[in-house]
Length: 87
Image 1 (tube, rainbow, N blue to C red):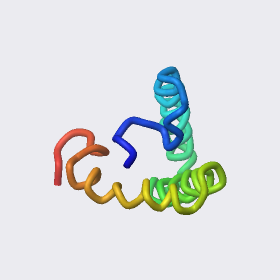
Image 2 (cartoon, helix red, strand yellow; image 1 turned 45 degrees about the vertical axis):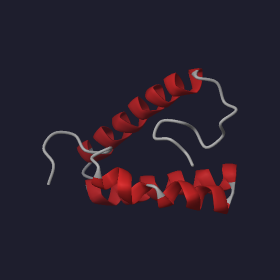
Image 3 (cartoon, rainbow, N blue to C red; image 1 turned 180 degrees about the vertical axis):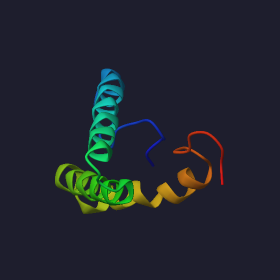
Image 4 (tube, helix red, strand yellow; image 1 turned 60 degrees about the vertical axis):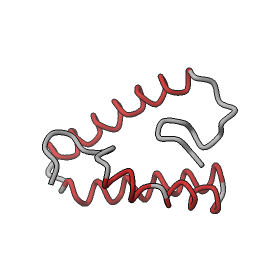
């Protein structure tokens, strides 16, 4: 229902993709800073996922967020989130 790089709200403009790239840069920076402070990357990843899904549910509701989440296993398996070598 939701293609890989489209927001849950299909009425948003294409400029939203640029905002996502900028936002991703902020998240990467936050991860790097937290790791420099000694925070375990696994704990940070879990907290980030929780925060992200909480925001999605608050913004789009439980059902739309669940539909979005249902597509994640196939995306993960196909390498959509992989960088470098695949396991």
